[in-house]
Structure formats: structure tokens, C-alpha cells
Length: 228
Image 1 (cartoon, rainbow, N blue to C red):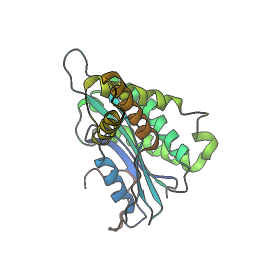
Image 2: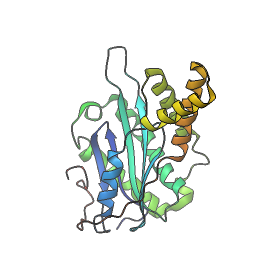
Image 3: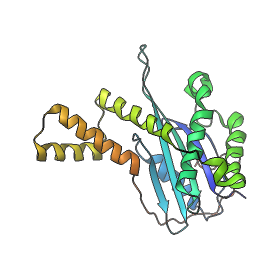
């Protein structure tokens, strides 16, 4: 039985490429995961909590800029549902490691870049499950980096990409517009305000408590959530 990280997945845009986990919480893991997967991509960390069941959902995105051939923007999502007793920096460190161990596959593997739902399940699910079990078995010292500056660098790149492409995140844009109107600044200042708002959102995320009910499901590999 898994403890710590109960479920995890890697997604390309809206496609779950690989996942692993189990649900001994009367469907709460599944529901928390589904709510988290539906959240709009932002430059930083996103959260979803089920206070009733003591679970935390956490997600991080990596934005891949389109190339010169006109390929679309790709948003890679790294997602986990954990027990609330698992410290947040441990959960973040776990996802940060997934970002790096999947880097070569996300760049070069056609299954990852163009495959359909669960395209990487057979090849990567055992690795994903092993990393989840490491969190349970090896504890804090094995999982937490001295700092998580690498994800801060990614958040900065995500923010600059969004600004450069003129993409607006509704909540952040609204905050930036209000601040701009209040201070009557020029366009360059408005850009700085929007960037600041994005950083605030990226650092703190959006925490939503959910009351969850559902059926009991006990699945490790094959998948738990993607085919529901």
C-alpha cells in the first residue's frame, strides 16, 4: 500500500500519457486527481485539497515554445495526489524529479510527443511507481533538494513565454488591469504588474477545499484515473 504519494501522472496538454497509484480513500484520490487535471495551466504550482480525506493535489507545468516550423505550444503537466502529512516541499521535489527524468523522452520520443492516452503507460509506469515508493521508503532526506530553484527558473520561463505570446490568464490579467488603472501607469509598467501578479500566483497557487465522496477503487498499474 502506497503512503505519501498516492497517485501521480505526466500529461501532454490534455492527454494523460502515464499514471500510477491506488485509492484506499473511498474514491477521494480519484476525485482529487480529476479536479486537479481540469485546472487551467498557469506558470507555477497549482493545488487542490480534500480536507475531509486529508489529501493534497499538486501540479506543475512546463511550457514548450513552438518551433520555427509552426508546431503548437505544448504544455507538459506533472501531477500528484499525496497524503496531507507529506510535506509540501517533498511533494514538489518529487514532481521536480519527474520533470528531469522525463526530459529526454519529452524531447525525442514520439510516444511522448504525439502518442494518445496512456501511450507511455507500459514503458514508464513501473518507473513512476518506483519513484512514488521512494518517497514512502526513503523519506525527507532522499527526496528534498537543498533548494527548488530549478522550478523557479521554469516558472520564470513560463511567465515570459506567456507575456511574449500575449496570452492572458483570466484572474491574473484582471488583477493586472485593476492595478494598472489605479496607478495610471504606462504599458511597460502594466507589463511589470502582470509579471508580478503571475509570480504571486505561481508561488502560492490556488488552494481549493473539496468534500469528496465516491466508490472504492484499488488500482496500481494499469491506470487509475485516465480512463474514467
